[in-house]
Amino acid sequence: MSSRRKFIKNTTLTTAAVSLTGLGAKAFGLPKQKETSPLVISTWDHGLAANVAAWKIIEGGGKAIDAVEAGVRVPEADPESTSVGYGGLPDRDGNVTLDACIMDETGNCGSVSVLRHIKHPVSVARKVMDETPHVILSGAGALQFALSKGFKKENLLTLKARTAWEAWKKEARYEPVINIENHDTIGMLAIDQKGDISGACTTSGLAFKMQGRVGDSPIIGAGLFCDNEVGGAVATGLGEAVLKTLGTFLVVELMRNGAKPQEACEEAVNRIIRKQVYEDFQIGYLAIDKAGNHGSYCIHKGFNYALMKNGSNQLIDSSYHME
Ligand code: SD4
Image (cartoon, rainbow, N blue to C red):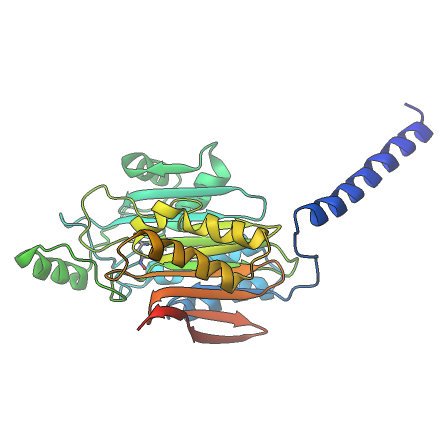
């Protein structure tokens, strides 16, 4: 092809691409792209320390996907955090089983569920995303994959968690408790300096759950969803209720159709309230849009989240449906 023909072809392609982008933004009501300042946002007060680790990466010009992975690794490694990673409360049979997922700005994602013996499930999820053709690995397969990638096999059941399990076994009643330790998943969303959005979510799931139970946290569209054109959302609380409504996918789709993050979180919680007997469990959603606006809503008073922006890190109480 002559260089002139090549030039004309390339020019036509570029023009087509530009006008398609313009049309796409108009036709689907996407928010106009504007300069967004970076941010990191995450669920519950353990989000404060997690945000600091994530912010270091964002501040240094790193990618949102690396920031969210580094951020949620902080509570994963903390033995005092009884709902995430090492130190997480076990299932009914005394096994600590972990769920986690991660999603980047291109829509790539990876996830592990019912993973035992590995302190950092989010990093295994990242490897599933980066180094396999799959999205989810579960149970023994997830462990085998982690070991093959050099992750260390560890005992994750701390004395504190074992003692809580022994106490629970005396009555062995399974009643999820609102806002107490068994509802403290960390979900994190970040916007980097390029304006790209990624997210991660990691948990030991419900305390004393049935063996093999998978919650919402490792399920893309339930515990976490990001779309770099629109925004992202994370969920915390009773995973079964989030799964039944694909909560974070719903939040992002509502934003795609024009809802603000706050409105989208409220509608997603209200769907659960309209369809389920909601009084005895907690659900909290946290969302950001492409412009860097954020919102949050939960069923019961008590859910909070940590927001790091312009170098300041603060804990904010979510608005709620009932006291
Ligand atoms: C689960 N959604 O496994 C998780 C628990 C949770 O805050 O979010 N706790 O159902």
